[in-house]
Length: 401
Image (tube, rainbow, N blue to C red; front, top):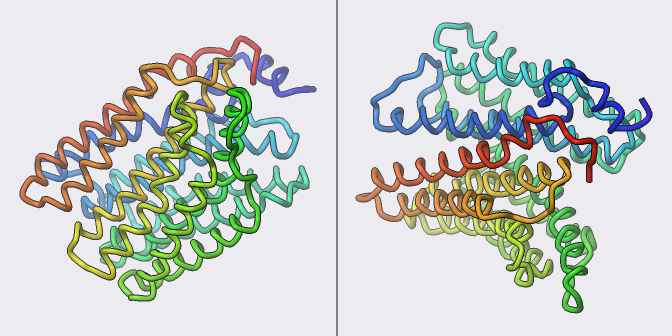
């Protein structure tokens, strides 16, 4: 095979296995819908899964390590070939990786009847194998610059393992070290990778629009300092989530990353939601940091869970949706522009996050707001599966941009 296109054309099996983003983005969207469909009745006590995790811990685990794990896999299996110049993994090898992820979801769901060690081994098989695949590609391509991405993936994996360990020992894993470590890794991925792609994609679009302010180039001194500040704040949050020093560090990180975001000229992108949503998704990083800082330093404003959802559902949910829509359009030869359906799914997710935060502010209305938030989340990801499903499931025409 001499090119990515040749390799994809040579594959005669299911079209969904022609590129890494296809099975993982489609699977992540379907899982985001199904897991929320299950979670809403679990929250009200009308449904109990045969899982060894308590309901809240299952919810936290499956949306962080289950959903985000799939999106990260789809993104990296699409990006790493571009970074390294090597051919992507296609066909049954890709299908095997997707099957490992899917088996992990099933094992966690029925873990109540299985040994805890076996469940952890099944669930961790996918991230371990996937990390090995990415390591091989980076080493073979001598792409040392992106070893930091592999390091963050390793921290995410350790967080998942720690989550299993805590749950197996009777701890409330939804508020444990593993959850915070995994969420911190996800936020750092957004800060590092988003810090490259948001200003770059914004610049590319704005240059076509004509004269005007352009984003500051990525990864300059200010960006590196911002990443250091955020990493320190996240380490403190993982180790001591309620300490005043953690609150102060998160407040500083929130301010610094708000300034970082302002340097990318997002206010000029309103005419193209596909670009604007990248800024909105990143905006939840400083917003979440500031909300957590306020809840640590002035407890009781809207609850720690609500503040944490600004990162978990806001930053991770919206940024991953933004990446999935853009990558799917770009790698299937479509115009890089958001249609009405795409705008609708973005709005649904933003409103879902706001409704979840509002539930913490107005506890009396929380049952209704939980239902509203869950319904909007389902609408957003079901909308993605409907609007983008055809692009993900059909065989490409041979053109890739």
